[in-house]
Image (cartoon, rainbow, N blue to C red; front, side, top):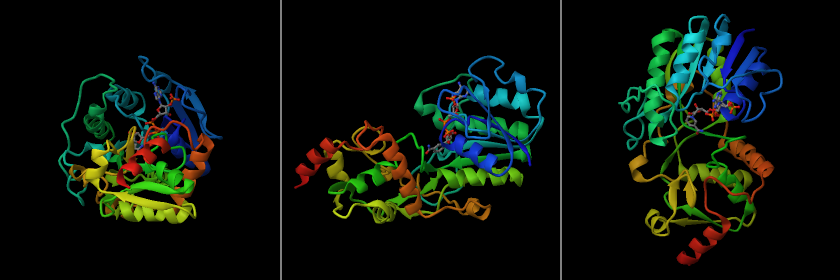
Length: 330
Ligand SMILES: NC(=O)c1ccc[n+]([C@@H]2O[C@H](COP(=O)([O-])OP(=O)(O)OC[C@H]3O[C@@H](n4cnc5c(N)ncnc54)[C@H](OP(=O)(O)O)[C@@H]3O)[C@@H](O)[C@H]2O)c1
């Protein structure tokens, strides 16, 4: 069994990676501040603030079989991790994103697509517009040091238990409540998700097998209508009535696509029709197995219930907003 370093490990994907690696018998060190949560049972927390100069220096003489880094918008973090342990690590996974692509409008494209311009300044940013550009620069930094030892995972929409974004979970939560539910009236819109547990499982098995290369990592291509059908079938209340609204009507009612307040999560404008329609066949051929969406919906609902179904959300419409919008349409 191997020795793994997870840069993160206290929440969502990186925590699921650490938990999976522990379950598969690896010794797992999670380097994080520990402020987002606890590391999984069986993993060790190395308290590290990656903003501090030389934060990973204590690891400099250590050797790892695998490193997994989820740095979001911090090229200096990526570089300093590579300096600290890049030479002594057999396999390096960097979790990137489908936000690296310049064109989000065309369905069916793969990893050969044109990327956004990298942002190579040695700064840490919270400017969301820098997300894709910093991921591109981070990917390059990882390839420069790890070469064929590098696995670049361009994740699509990650869903399931412990998701902090409130996007996918909105739908199981809403459909389980029942009654008249406002839904996007564009069922043919492409949609594609990956369950956090499946992605974590693939990342760990790929590290064990020293899989190298760059992959768009998400589930099979589907449609928003089919995804919502599966969610409704899995967890919808008996009295659920889905009320589809045309995109123009939603826009006129001030409803946002994708995420955020007063939004219908996963609904995308036509300009982004390619975002959730990546060619994920290479990842599937390389072992990324995706469970049925119904299973993700049940797990997401269980997580929603631990948080409380009526809490303030980062994404979705509130019950009051939904009633007000539905009244406009009736
Ligand atoms: N969610 C999606 O749908 C989606 C889609 C595409 C790609 N992705 C990518 O998937 C990955 C998700 O990673 P994730 O779920 O683990 O969540 P994350 O929020 O990206 O990562 C958070 C981890 O980083 C640690 N961290 C934050 N600040 C730190 C600091 N100053 N020093 C040390 N550690 C620090 C956190 O631990 P502490 O706070 O405890 O320090 C936590 O363990 C990211 O790379 C993201 O870009 C996500």
